[in-house]
Amino acid sequence: MTVDSDFNFLKMNRPPSKPRTSRVTEIRGPYYTMPGKHYLQDLLDAMAPYVDAFKFAGGSFSLMPSKSLHDLIEVCHAHDVKVSTGGFIEYVLTQGKEAVEQYLIACKKAGFDIIEVSTGFATMPAYGILRLVEKVQTLRVLAKPEVGLQFGAGGATVTAERQAGGPNGPARAIRGARAGVAAGSPGSPPWSELVAWTTDKPG
Image (tube, rainbow, N blue to C red; front, side, top):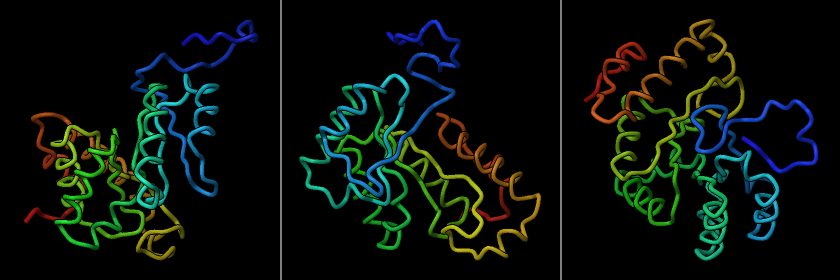
């Protein structure tokens, strides 16, 4: 990637040009402060070549007037930046299947490019996560299943229980990531990866 910079004489570890499949950078906002349209415009005018995705935090988009939300999404798209819902679907899941289906459709209509399938504050069987991923994919929206390890931050498990997972924790997370990739591959059922990920059985 080439940027018109006064410092191009320096050796820099710049990412490849967009669209990127590696070294992808996602920024998060709004979080503690609320970026409006002009703030985001200024930010991306300066740094868009380095930003691949803009992630809303904590369902903040659901509190915004439609015009404000659409303005932010349009600014991102004008700078070739994808827009992600961030972690929120676990809250929607508590309201039932119909609410989840309406939520996915509303995200698509609003212009979101990525719907995060997050489980940081909810417990969900592995096959449930993969079914949600496949559901998102049918809307021709990118699904981003959350896979990670948490110790004492969020989640439905206390710190001691997470630490008790020991060295299997990272290995299980890797298997989960592979299952998520398989779920997003056209014509590639994820269940073969799922068997290695969990002992849960699809019902």
